Length: 315
Image (tube, rainbow, N blue to C red; front, side, top):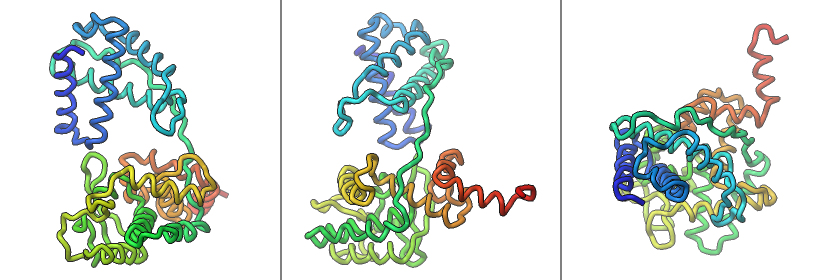
């Protein structure tokens, strides 16, 4: 790839970090999407790389079309076709990149602005039935290593108690926990901070785990709350693998078992117990209420009862 455009991409990624305050993982995903797009350009018409003003919406559509035919070779994907969700993300990256190029006066117009985003069907999320929660919490008991057993149990309890994201849990330090008020300081998407309450079971589970590893609430505040076997901050992959194993047992081998399943479970159980959807939005750290409304599809009967009890003309 032309070094000039490598530099342009790098400048764009730095811009995302400074101006939009995006997470490292999100910025890395933008970089991968742009690498794929520019590799396509080299094969499609290499002269375009030297004159970005010549790129139009037709070129971008050709790229998206080629992506629909691409096979996903990542572990666990079994060579399936790239999903509409992935292609929508790639288009969003391209739109954002060209918008930046217009901003810094490297091109005249954004060629991606009128390219339609593929329609993405919102899937009803997996969640654990309330009757199965206790069985889930007992799964780590099968682990022979006491420290790992207590750690995994604390992770399960904290995920279920708070609905936090995987990256948010991994990023927690001991100092993130207010053990007096039972409050968690979470750094979410875009480095936005929010405060999330947790219950006694999660608190007890964390205390037992910290005591087992020789720490406590009075330990150094910047120590990771959860550690791997090498006494370093636990990795996303480790948490994913451990929870996937436990959840698949409970969900009967259903696909899509992941830490996000417990986030969905948190939201679903709150709604089932008459929590206000705006409060659920705040607790989950959703920027848009539309993200939270997926839980209304999980239990439409619940929403119907709320409507009938609250609306003057419901009956």
